[in-house]
Image (cartoon, rainbow, N blue to C red; front, side, top):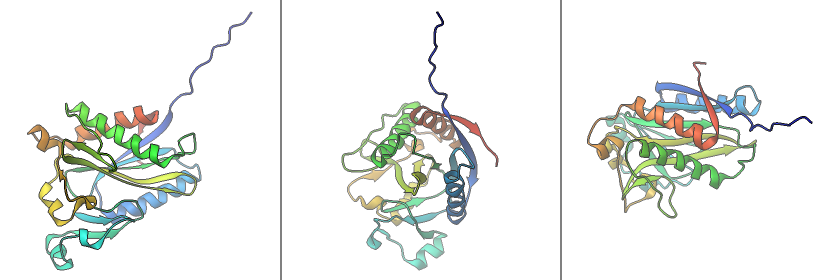
Length: 229
């Protein structure tokens, strides 16, 4: 008699690309190209990790009154403004903030936008836990919080074929005064925070990146492989 051994399927590969400081326009173009490649099966799931120069982005649910600076002031302060294809309201990106753009194919049993958002939140709550912080959610809101301070914003897009783009922004050593240029995500009654502010020390972006990769591996059952392509 021959025993049959059943083994669990190996985790899918997740390419990780660390891009450093990248313009928002450049990141939009790169995401569009990668979404096309992922849909065609030319690349595996890919996680982009980067920073942006100062930029205000407008999601599909944004309201003009949530941008608090004029075009003249934005130009003077070097802040760009972009309309995006993601969900959500107004947000800010800038140096010292870890931005992650998963280009994932959700067709393998994860075709659920609500679950996808909660999975990203779970990964970021795990990142905060690695630094000794207790992160959580707020009912009816998307993102990750420590007490009344929002440390991570999430805004995603899922295109035809269940391919994801856009993603999350985690304040690591961000200049939080820049959030005074907007009403973040249209939320007036809560503040913003950062890893460095909560811990009272400067957290290197590389530490947050490494933690994010580990948690995306765990939550999404992926095996990370560094990619330079």
